[in-house]
Image 1 (cartoon, helix red, strand yellow):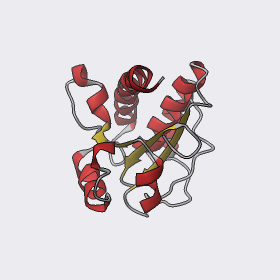
Image 2: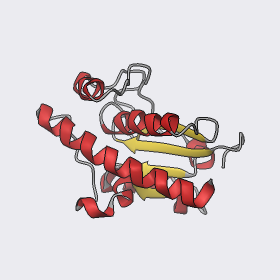
Image 3: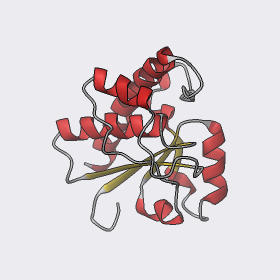
Image 4: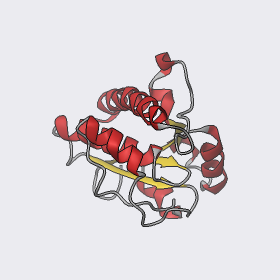
Amino acid sequence: MNSQGKIGVLFVCMGNICRSPTAHGVFRQLVQDAGLEQRIEIDSAGTHAYHVGSLPDHRAQATAVSRNIDLADLRGRQVEMEDFHRFDYILAMDNDNLGVLSDLCPVGLEEKLRLFMDFAPDYGMREVPDPYYGGDRGFDQVFDMIEEASRGLMEEIRQRHL
């Protein structure tokens, strides 16, 4: 738990404009629907500084809006060292970003790092693919995967922390 007594969840992809802000928005909605905003802190970040300060990709936003999720208040940021202390769950979208996080992670905090899809073991995929260079259908697939993993994450948090 962080200094405010909240369970901290950080979603991480490469640039923080597609996958991680989508996960941020989807999980935030689950938390709000459950009335747990005072118990769970949510954020997203990228391992690289490509899009610091940028809005989520317009295709990610359009896909989210089509499913009643708003990402317009989110802005890209890069992972900071403080994040490893602040968050209980640091969830990478793929193995490449998990590797970057592992390299940055202070000794003794490695147990916080996981692949996000670990929370959707029945989905059959361990990594959320980057839809940035693909077509719009890729954003729909990513959203479906993120919804599934978000439900699994919520269940784990309920069982372990609430």
